[in-house]
Image (cartoon, rainbow, N blue to C red; front, side, top):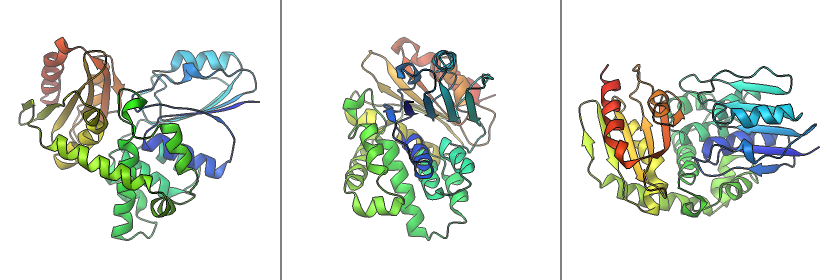
Length: 318
């Protein structure tokens, strides 16, 4: 029997897998990539009797590969919070899918494990830009203000490392970052003993400072849009900058566009809090996906930028 752990290379994917492996130690082949590297199941060569664990990657985007693995006899456990479409009914599939607002994959794993390693779920929720959910989750852990701030910093640093066109843009390959995290049962041990996290924090703050200095490409009473320059720092900062914009101005929608290697843009969309607008639906109409609060488009042609921003303004204005 072979085992595969398939996970998004961001804070949520890393912390979700870490919780599971703290509870269920297992040697497995790691399959991961950048935040936008979602079509991961096609890279898994599993067959009859093999075990595949999938965390924080869209079932909708991986449906064909998922069905092929099930047909070959692999047994699959799937945790995710992104738009999934119809979840296949198959005896080889154990699906934990919840698209509700304020839920990330690490929260689903935390539920599954009945809170055994909840501090890691708090880290993941902060990293995924879910500050209210993270704070609620942490309420019963007896953390003081400084400890909660440290977990938030850790989550945001882990998440920051996942953004880029390819692993060449990242400071640390996600599989390597997971292996570093996996050495520590408690996040405070990681913060105290692993100097890499300080480096990630320093780079993240410098990259965000550059992004904050930019003027909006478009600004209105309902939505702001930023176009970042064609630079590695911008590709790294794009997602955490979008999360920061949403936290600072939660009543607005936000779009962050970053030039990519294909000659177009990679896009992050954040929805205003409490409205009917769905970032996932907007992104899906332009070839992307995501969840209601946060969506993304891997590649947007330059000729379609105005159409996207017009559509964003129109949908938020409904």
